[in-house]
Image (cartoon, rainbow, N blue to C red; front, side):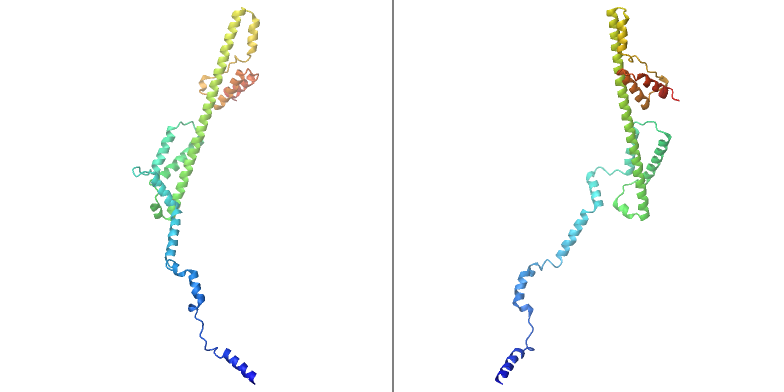
Length: 278
């Protein structure tokens, strides 16, 4: 009986005030007191609300400004040109290109090349009408989608025409340089053959004066230069030889200068293919 009453008192002590105990106030606890200083929330509370977002937005704007390639191109173009020197229009640039092309030497062109050049000139004239004024950003923003597409097509046509003109001029320059090299090589070989002939005649006359009219030294002198006195036929009415004829003449002059046995064969090919083509 005594033990049961003791158990009852202990059980009542443990559970008797269970419903009357107030809930724990977390804001007044020791854990909360130590937790707040560890987070340092009071120090960063002033600038975490809106300035951080403003900093992010300003950073985004800076990045967008740096990546604005169109603005960079416009700024670079305005920096390279002084305020006193105005920007040149597309028509002025095309006029300068035409002047440079007219000043450069021109060669005879085939009918096909002349037709292609006429087409190129027409495209250039068409592009000049479109590009009569500089293409600024404000002007481009005011154009419609169809106008921008048409302008893009004209720009591509202009680029293609200028590319064809550049390729034609570069090919013409290469042809002129090749022709110049051939002419220089031809003149050098011709002078070398003339000098050898002059030395041959001087040696021949000297040997005749020393030995009288003996045919033996003269025979040896001729045998030493068998093809040096070869004559290359040429018609004055045919005008200046072209590159193909110059190449054949250079081969013949090289063979004569080296006293090569291929001189008759080269001379025959020259007569049949250049002088009298079938």
